[in-house]
Image 1 (cartoon, rainbow, N blue to C red):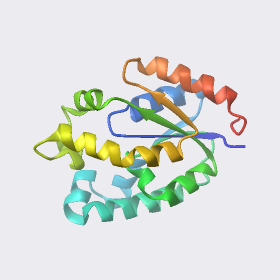
Image 2: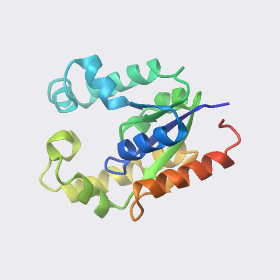
Image 3: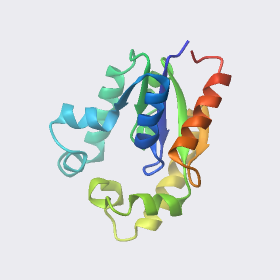
Image 4: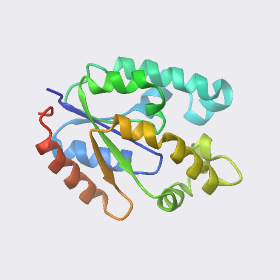
Length: 175
């Protein structure tokens, strides 16, 4: 039986906000992979992208995910691109029910508009086009990885948590 929940999804879908609330409701610890990556690297994610590129970041992500495979009773907020490396999902699946949070491109653009400096992949002139292209490319990866999918576009974080908890109750592999 799996005792943890991994939240995946595109940036701005609510993984951190929902993850903290879900962990509190379930009485589990909250883990944010990007924070662990920053600690391990000794620098911020934008710095990692600037100095080591996306490949350097993805290597750190794989390493941190490997370190998390035995994490029990946790809610883990994953970075938006964690699904790009199947090894990450295979490792998470050992202990986690994987919940994919989705949102429309318009909602994502609104939610991420104030933090472009913190999101290296959105540091481009045409953010709307970049969001749409990245989402289109990643969609099959999210679908293939998810045990549960919840659209967060038009509902509150509390409602998202309630929906996740309902689906977890119905999931035979979760306890």
